[in-house]
Length: 494
Figure (cartoon, rainbow, N blue to C red):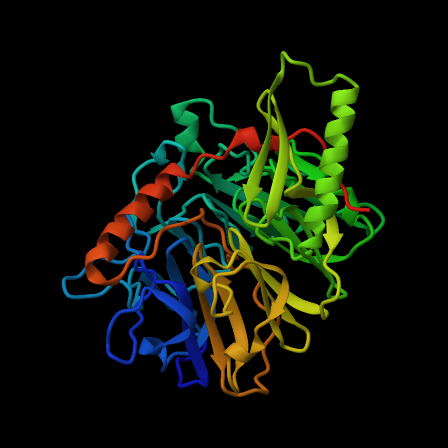
């Protein structure tokens, strides 16, 4: 580990601060709960930062000395440090019960720190539709059953993945969405799933990626070929396999057979892939612009949905006994026509086959949150798109962006080194040295995996506490995924 030293780095946060994600004040020393542009967090100015990781409403900061600082909403031990009277949890503070580490990751309400020698520490809690699984862990706890070197760690909404030096994958956490590759049919198995267990694959695993409740691996195939496999929740086609069936075991994504994928990220219901040439591919849900394919995609898919509807009716595949309703709903971006057949829906707000995002520069890194995304181009430009609620996109408004928007100007005379996305806030660090020689963003970071936190705008101290309680309550209730949104057929773009 390097020694701590004064660096030309700055740490920033923006987005929602209404649930204690971070502390921000205006020129009058009044607390701000919605921050439209990067707000500098100065408490760590004298430290050399190597990685930032956002959870749902908290964040971790890793320094070059292997120390970890935490801040944010102190929900059931997620910060990994004791509550001290007079200490504001929104201000970064050192986690003292950790040895030096070189990797960090955050989920919805849990945190992971590890080093390449095989030491893994966990704190916080995983949750399912019934609430927390087991007892929350208030301070870092060593995972004793990991005994070999580690290449990479990732956290999803309520699961953790570890890629071992032996090219094997361990997973643990909540099994309801199948993302850990096994089911929980008894209370005993639910608890047992909190222990790391391998995903059984015959081929060596080269890399791992995750969304909120779905996951991907890059696998060494025959004759020097590689394959991309996905599994977990797939109700909006976020696995890119051409259908909407949830998958317990890894399934080959044929679209990527001849594409050199180097990174993948995912939100609640969407995914984005980056290839070695800098191209981006997106798939899954796009009603808030998550896929970056433009608003015109809505019209194309709407026409296909209507045509599909007419064909279904004409062929009498939908009769009065199973046709519950035909409805027309007004949506923010237009009308959504849908037919509900039993527990399934035909609509146009999703894409199950990866599509290239066109008319953008070549990219070098990508990050996704539940419903929004960031990307950094090979020239260092910063782009954002998706749901703009709480000003997370850095555009000074809350409008959804259906195409990647250049927001490079949010940092003046600074180079963005890394960015990490929470449910409704963003953490980033920069260098004032524009020639700073940094490698590609560390793929072991969490890229936005927490549940949606849609809350009204509280104002000042009296309403803030109520908003926090409301958000924490919603955080529990929104764990359950909506199986009624599993569509019947694939809708492709010509």
